[in-house]
Image 1 (cartoon, one colour):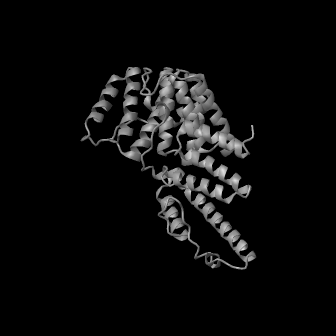
Image 2: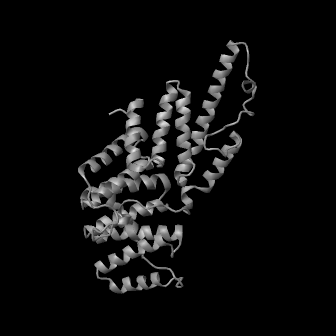
Image 3: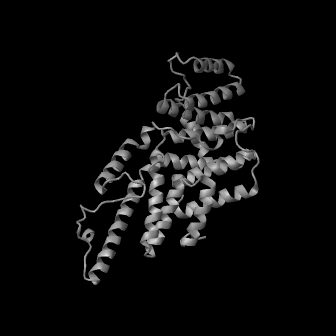
Length: 326
């Protein structure tokens, strides 16, 4: 199905807002597509209003998404120029030229409804600074874990357990529409894949989860690199699935990679690192390595112990590779 008409995009936007919330960065992507369609139709006011909403979302989004705010700001600036040109043309036909129509490009202010941006130059300087300080490799900001991070291996969860067929169909449709709108390799597709995997998890459909999480992992690795903290979330999610399937030898190298990434990104005593370590302790116990499990648990429980927690990862990467094609 083509998603090229305003009606199609508005319908998809409604589904997306219900599924992800009205302030999701993925909603901002769809808003940009909708604004572009209105711009093609010559409706400057409608396009401007929608771009402003997209910008208000992106300015407070997580680092990878926030960098896209500059492009939206440029669109708003272009629209403001087009509006001024139209006003000047109308005024000239009437024999007068409004004072603001005589301004040069450098003098034209960019005034956004969310306020606080005094000029075009100041706005783009701010966005350049934001982009430089929020490069994915830095991995210093908090990352809200999604999907399996709230479900333990016994099937307990702090989310509602009942998942209807309509919820799954809606999540599948969202993925299809996202692929059509932003392509197969966009991070928003990875987010949607992980969301669908979470629904499958609550129905214990582990086999269906694996290809979704593998694809989401590949997208994040391609977008941010192998050492990004969001990659660790997907690695941990996959490890949980394999542990639920009692495929411990497959889960272990993934989990070790997640631990190493989080230790570098957050430090050994951060709650996200400890969360991954606790899962590793569980894996060790399930594979009868109780001495190693007790050793790691003691170090987790003693924040004053600054010695490194070894996960023996020197030969693990090859063990991970084959799982991409399963």
